[in-house]
Amino acid sequence: MLGLASVSTLAVSQTATADIYKSGGGSLYAGLNYSFMDIESGRDDVDVGALSARVGGLVSPYFGLEARAGFGVDDDRIDGVEYSLDNFFGGYATLNLANESPATPYLVFGFTRIELEAQSVLGTTTEDETDFSYGAGVNVELTPEVAGNLEYMRYYDKNGATVDGLGLGITFSF
Image (tube, rainbow, N blue to C red; front, side, top):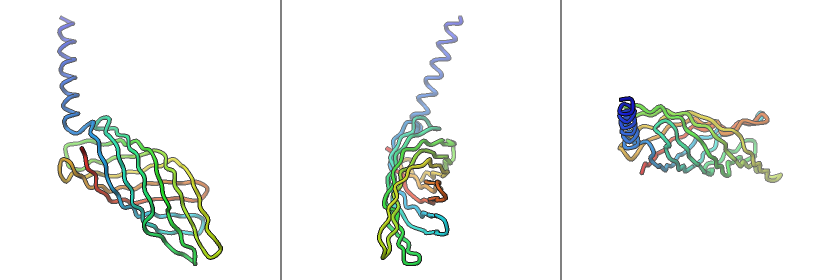
């Protein structure tokens, strides 16, 4: 009798797992974001814009992996120095609060490599740095295949310098 109960339990758990994956878990996605980036270093505080793409997949409804890459599209000038975000890329994990509503909050963490540039009449300085990154956001389902996205990220925080971003985007699931 114990064997029959074990087989029944296994069958029910496999059916439940299949239902999870049919309802969105395990899906691949790609998206575009525009981020309002704030770069602070010492007394300097500049605001730049960045366009980025992300691709990833949900391992389960609660955990995902993704890669992102982006580049600056809007520079800032302070005291004759033009600051820009040349590019960034990274790998991240997401912890998703999957639920029945159209809004799915999540936490994101990983590593980002970022390249910043400062240019003045005296020359150009470029810095490449990598740091642990983290943030939080929410995906809002617009259709079963399309979601809007709002996210805050701390991309970089080292040696008295920080790079934060507030992003708006769209994600396509397939």
